[in-house]
Image (tube, rainbow, N blue to C red; front, side, top):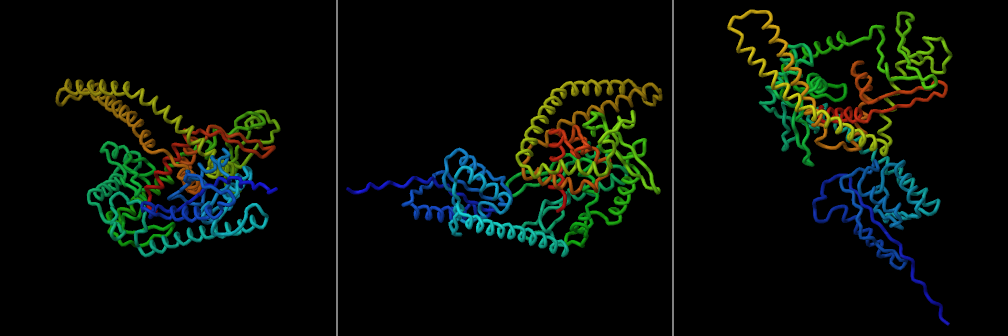
Length: 522
């Protein structure tokens, strides 16, 4: 009696391919196709074991291996969790991930759902302990290679800037980029506007009056189109982007790299002496115009910080020792009633830094950040709809005010010096200006929704915000925190801090930071 042979169990195989850059993806046979073809050949060699390649393609073209924010990888993991895949094949380990932490997460998902992983050019078996060891060693080298490439890129940019050459990025207002030989060339029309902006600041001696004048002239920031066809810039001026424009030494024929300033190959469009006068005025306004509360302390978390054990607000206070001021937040129940409280006192500067660090940690939690961005965008759209709903009423009120102003102006006789007519005209003029500014607000907010926020951009913006936070004016620090945070609860006994974020405010701050990062000189 002959024994009956059992056919091998079918092993459903998925092929994952990845390429960091988009270069060459438009070709008929790209790097992704080469990776897939090699993996298909490997699957064919294992047909006797029941291996069968799935028709679904998991190709990530133009995505870095440094994070898990990749559409094809996300689809792959969803299909694994859905029980549709038994084995995943890659050309090399670094095609799946170049981050040791991310790779550990991915392999953990594979093991949970009993999915094997095969690198067709690196022989090992992830089901054995020695195979997992080899896998981690290979991945450590992949992560090291990625970090080395990043360091080389930064060094190249530094060397290019030190030679005064344009190293890439978005062009500034007043300049275009010569694509044949990467360098800045003067845009005469925009250069005239840049010089006018510097003159306006020296005339008005303040950022806000210049912003209003630029809005009246309908002047916008530099408009650029990326290689992907995305339009950037072209937005109304704000105090932030106006300040960045005024402090940029590129307009004087120089290039900045971090704290270094070097002579550039491009021509200057602003007189260096005028630029220096603007810097001195900005410096004096910054130091002379900061707002300090009446008690003499700078309290960024005033009204936000609460003592969790007592349920009371934590009040800002200070002490002076040796001529130096030390700021604190103190539980108000301790101040009012002298009660013992585990959160009775905490250094203000330390608490403010921790709050900003907690906000920035969102960049390390993609799922939570994604949820916050989604909720914030939803809330901002709701608020924007409410603003748009009130636009009609404001437009009608503005039309009536203008008509009344014209009638009063016509009724006034030439040379009429009646105090009542003059004051009435002035009041109407101020009311018209106020209404026009209110009507601009929905337009400014609408611009932030031209493109949805991308997760990796938002994460980078939060990191940049944390790095730049300490160098910003205190009033700006307070404004940003109050936009992003609704409440801060502190428990001194357990040493715990809990933030209640304002998703809509956080989205607004992140959008502004992304805009600033895109428009500033790299």
